[in-house]
Length: 237
Image (cartoon, rainbow, N blue to C red; front, side, top):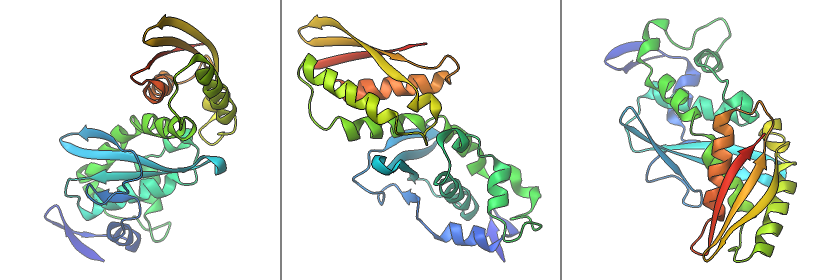
């Protein structure tokens, strides 16, 4: 089927047209689910929010994207396809999703291209997705820690209990990847009493992606820190 995109008449696969019409995972900024915390970012002047719908007991997590920018049908289809593919992949493989993977996924038949190659350079979503990948970890990990830390922590005892629970829950989340499920918080070191201040040491495998380790540490700090408790999380290997 042909439609007009970027001022050009293009032939799209039916899958592209279907994904462009649906809003299962890509929302206008005012329409995304209010119950999900959103991580805001800007990519080349386009504003996006990243959020995750999760069931941690079932090791299920699903990416959602919001934007207040006007998307072309083609860009919308690529973003929806990226989110669709992420449903069944672990976190490592989500980061490996390429433009070619998405184009293949959007084909009606394997031997027919989803759209002309002449317009690849005009698909803004290709670059957006590469930038979004770099920010996916922190909102996901924040969602995970928030799901565990449901009560304010006001003492060393409650903090220790919370850390023990986090270690237990992390081991069950194999879908995120072994660098997450095999990591472990190994020490809680008091730093000050008023306000309560602690350093948490987190042991990661030596070849963990530094960005993943950073995202984990910052997300846990954000979840645990409050007016009465300050936490610094540091990575150990």
